[in-house]
Length: 239
Ligand SMILES: Nc1ncnc2c1ncn2[C@@H]1O[C@H](COP(=O)(O)OP(=O)(O)OP(=O)(O)O)[C@@H](O)[C@H]1O
Image 1 (cartoon, helix red, strand yellow):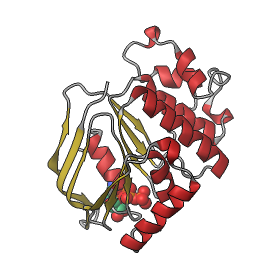
Image 2: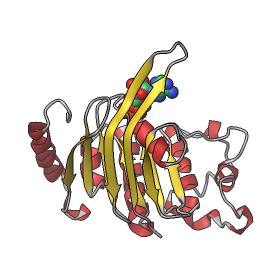
Image 3: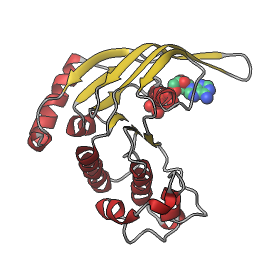
Image 4: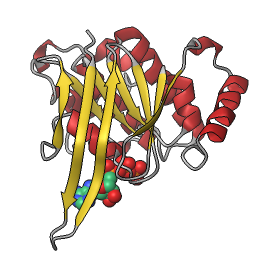
């Protein structure tokens, strides 16, 4: 199942312990249609993670609103895998489920190349495998909404490429409404149906770029041509 999502943040301010403030977001409005895949790109520190946390209901201290279907299930893949080291891979995934006993990890683990890993502990995994487990944990709840916070950073290009294909395949199969934060324009061009570009802090939307070309037709030449267009159109924001 998919559910549309909207986030409207008039203002989000962080207050430091010593009284200082950081205005992270001002006038941000993003909507993702049900089953869509949107990539969120913006300069470092502009408020992307802040926006995902607000969407996921992890931060209520802001002016604005989030619109989600009642009861929508949200899967969140954080920047770091955040696995419990004293639990096995399978236990880490079961932990987030309402009905862990009714869950058969077989098909999902096979799809993500994790079937040999179920009984391992997170410390035995490479970062790429740990990221796959984090993705499995997010998908296991059959999310209506999938939030991905730079899920491929710090991976070598081969591992990142494989994980991108797994994310794309999972999105195509289950069609959760997906919002992915990334710094990587090529990655956004490969995966998303739309790119939303954010301004430097306090973030707001600068441009929305629809990507209508079918994924199968997005070869390297297409990605490079679109990236060059974006760099020209938004110098300083897209590298
Ligand atoms: N808990 C906090 N307390 C104070 N300031 C914070 C806190 N969390 C984030 N900030 C500040 O708010 C701004 C936005 O942070 P956020 O992590 O959302 O940015 P981001 O776009 O995700 O960054 P990056 O691309 O580097 O991951 C930054 O200037 C950050 O330093």
